[in-house]
Image (cartoon, rainbow, N blue to C red):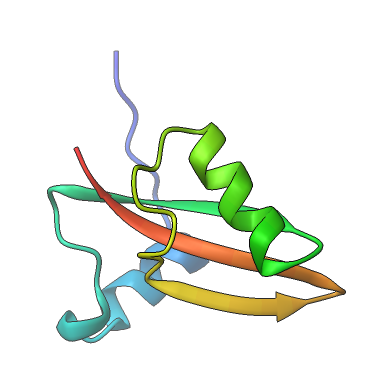
Amino acid sequence: MTTTPIYQSLIDEQLTELPEHLAVPPDRVVMVFKGLTTEDAKRQARIAGIENAEAWSGRAFMCGLCTLAYQVRL
């Protein structure tokens, strides 16, 4: 049995407003790793199996942590 929500969630609304050039391709997922430094975040990515930790697709520094994002093919 499946259910369908009556109301769209905030995330669903934001995804429909996202420009196509910013959307993640359907054959990929985004994996995010955090560390105290960029090197720490890359190390976490390597541990998780990211072959080329230097090829991150997005980076942010928030609350004293470095966050690296990788688009990974399924």
